[in-house]
Image (cartoon, rainbow, N blue to C red; front, side, top):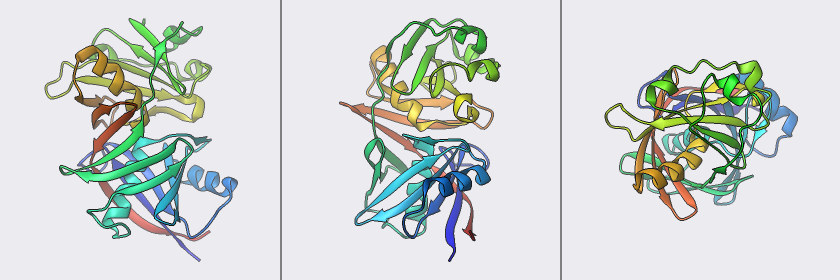
Length: 263
């Protein structure tokens, strides 16, 4: 038996930009060790595994090292595959069951929009060594269930960061979001995301981080809908809006290849 396996660049309209994700369509249950091995073989920031469960899909996400509880770009990539391959009709929403509860994806205004839980942060003391590992002094520091959020002075401060990843991996969190108001036209805020503790030094575009960034910047800018730019080397655009305890993440994706997994 073979399994369909895809690679999709998410949160971009251009191949080889945005964040690449693996998407594997399962024909039934597979054990966790096997999924982790496939993700390590793919060596992407995340590989998503989808198993149909009635009218919805169970979705799990693995980095090359660990399973994670929430991943935006690999969910966007998964929805893109389901729509493009005709597994789900283009006008129909997609329902996912995940470790973070029910998630949804639908086509809206030329984008795929994900319906995710908000990941609100609260002001927190800086963990030892964080500022030194980042090479930047926080103007504000918060923490949510997954990550630290660090506000720095401006967009240029975000772009010029060159973290010490070995030191940053010692911070007790999934990752560190660094953000600032945007000075580039067309964007409200910029960010970068570092997660060496889970095997990803820098993630190109991080949907789950925007579940924290969206309410954070809504509160500061007073806007319901915002546009974020993740200023990694590949770069990517995430359109966000906040509704109560949910965050809607809008983006586009490009299918780079499809193949068959033989093991």
